[in-house]
Length: 532
Image (cartoon, rainbow, N blue to C red; front, side, top):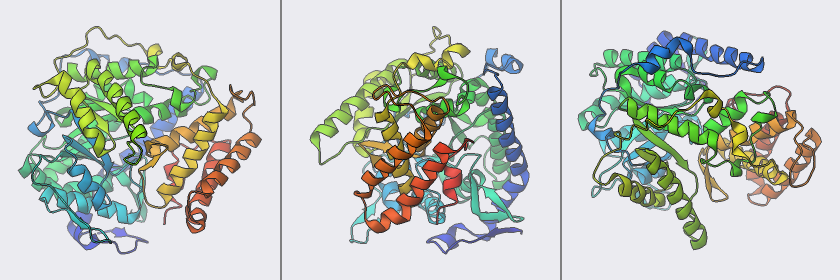
C-alpha cells in the first residue's frame, strides 16, 4: 500500500477511522478516478478561457436528445420522499452534529465542505461523528460537564453528507507522494464506515454533491458510486445523490446531470450563494453588464435568479426528482427579540416563495428556524410528502434570461465594499481558526459568502466602478484604505492573540486576492495552505 498519512498530528478517533482497510479503499478510489478528476478540472479552465475570449454559455447542442427525452430518475427511497425542511451545518464538533440531529428537521445536510474548515481534526472528527450518528451512539460532554446526546423521542433527520468539491485537495493523505482529492477522501472514508449500517437503517448512504460544473463531472461521481457499490458489496443504486446547482455552467446542464447520475440521482438543490459567486467569477471580465451589485441588494426575486430556480423546479419534477430550495441565512438572536422576529419574518417570506414555486423543501441554518420552514411547507404540502406533481409546464427559460445579471438592478456602493472586506476578513479568520460556519451581522456565513465578497471587490476594481453612495472610483488605493479601516474595527472584537493568529493572516490573504492582477478560482485553496 502506497497511501500514507503525512504531516498529521494524532487526532481523536484517528485509530478508528484511518484503518488499513479504509485507507486501502481510499487509495483504490484515488488510483481509478483521480486522473479523470484532474482532467475535468483542466476542462473547467478551458471553458473559462473561451468565455474570456467572448464565448457565451448556452444549452449544449450535443445533449439535446437528453433534454428532450422522456426519462425519469428512480423513485426516491422512503427516507428521501419528504424533505420539507433540511438543516445544514458541519459534522464536527460533535455538539453541533447532535444539535442538528435533535432539531426536528426532516434532513440534516452534514457539511464537510463550505461550512467546515478542513483541519485534519475536523476531517477525521466529522467521519467519526457521522459513523456514531449512524450507530445511534453519538454523544458529547463539554469541558463544563454538560452532556449532549441524541434524543429518542423524535424522528431524527435523514443524514445527507456533503463531501468536499472536486477542486479541493487533502494534504494529509498522499498517494505515491501526491495529495489526495478531498472529495474522494471524504466520500471514501464515510461510505466505508457507514454504508452497511445506513442501508440497514434505510437511511442511506446519501450525498449532496457540490460545485459541479458539467454533466461529465456528474458522470465521474456516478462511476465512483457504481464502483463503490461493487467493491463494498452494496446493492446497486443504494447510494443516492442530490446535486447542488451552484455554478452557472451547471444551470445549463441540469437534465444532463440527473441523466448521468442515472440510478443514483435523487434531486437538485438551488445553491444560491455559490451560484452568485459563480456568476461573478465566470464573467468577471466580460463587461459592465455582468457587474453584480451589492450582495445585500440581490434577492431571489431578481429575474436572473428566478429564471434559475424556476428552471430547477421544472427540470426536477419532470424527471421525478426532488427540487430543494436554498439557504435562508438569517439567524435568530435569542438575546435580541427584535432581531429574532425580523429573522423569522424574512425566513418565512423566503420559504413561502419557494413553496409556492413548487420546491419540495428548503434549507435553514439554525434549529430555531426549523419550525418556521416546516410550518410554511406544511401549509402547502399538507399530508403530501412533496409536490412532484407541480410540473411547471408554463416555465420556459432561455440562456439570455439565465445570464441577465443587469436585471437585478441595485447599485455598487462604498457601504457594500466595506461589508465585503469586513465579512471577507472576519469569515476567513474564523475559518483559519478551524470553524467553517459563523454568524456575522445576524447572518449565518460560510465559505460562499467570503467568495462572493472578495470576488465582487476584484471585479469592481477591474472595471473601475464608481461607487453610488460616495462617488469615489474603485482603485487599489481605495481598497487598501477601506480594508485597513475595517480590519482595525475588527481588532476590537477579539483578543490581541487571536487577532495576530488569525485576523492578520486573513487580512493579508483578502488583500492579495482582491488586488492581484490574476484572479484565484477559490479562496479556500490558498487559505488551506495557512491552516495549521
